[in-house]
Image 1 (cartoon, helix red, strand yellow):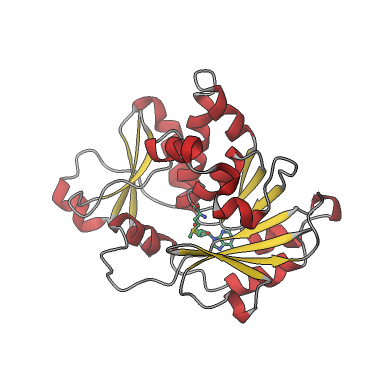
Image 2 (spheres, rainbow, N blue to C red):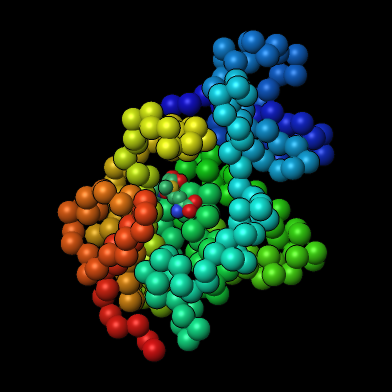
Length: 268
Ligand SMILES: C[S@@+](CC[C@H](N)C(=O)[O-])C[C@H]1O[C@@H](n2cnc3c(N)ncnc32)[C@H](O)[C@@H]1O
């Protein structure tokens, strides 16, 4: 388990910092602690400042911040020039001009995929169980909502997203028949690649915080009983089928594969 401390750099946000400390069971950084002592005691710090919330290694030479920023250049570029409904994820989910499904994303992470689907018109419920990841995602959504008056397109997109902190198995177990989603999306952590240069250091850090999602086969079994039309599983291109279950078909890209479990014909 990684050791984390909360570093509140904005006095206006001290209440938020206290709430986070309670939820995450982490201490708040003593401002008198030396950098060396901080690095010896903690691996990461959750920095709360006027940019929002970000997870930094206490040794900042290791890698950069992990944060959730829906108005980042990368997210904006993908939103505007990412290929729309022609993207593999959109095809796998079944998005079209006639069908913008209600998607339940059981493995929200930092919401990158969920945001893409919401930007294509889907209403997306994101479920995340890891409290650190959930805090980053919740902060990213909140900041995007606050900028809605200046960026109405972004505001509309995040307006389609809701976020729940819960284990997805529990969430699925409590769904009523009327709440069944059109599509269920699952993107468990890829098995960790050994020190591959291709895996960004931030991604390795994310992995060390979340751990491996060893229960994702069970999640797939539950999802197959709840989705109206499809369950879509994102995998690395060479990964085995999740839970050894053969999908109806796969859409394979350069590094990613979408395994589609088609349960019913899409309604168009
Ligand atoms: C690979 S990341 C997902 C990345 C995400 N698709 C994105 O675009 O940012 C997997 C995430 O799913 C979460 N997760 C895995 N199993 C879960 C479960 N049963 N319930 C809730 N969250 C889960 C992990 O905590 C982790 O944050």
